Image (cartoon, rainbow, N blue to C red; front, side, top):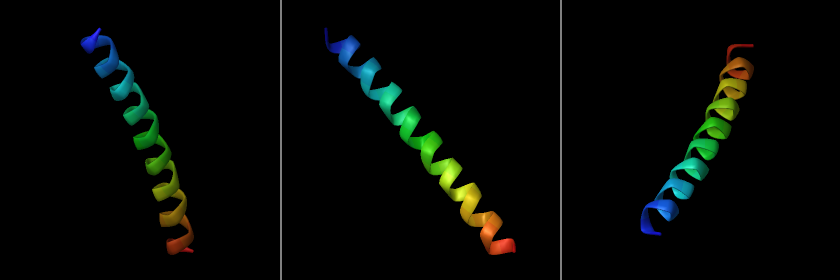
Length: 33
């Protein structure tokens, strides 16, 4: 059970990281312009 919970947490973190990366990319683009 514990391992399952950990796996779910890592999945959520991955999504959060992806979202942050996308946001950062957009910010960088606006900065360059």
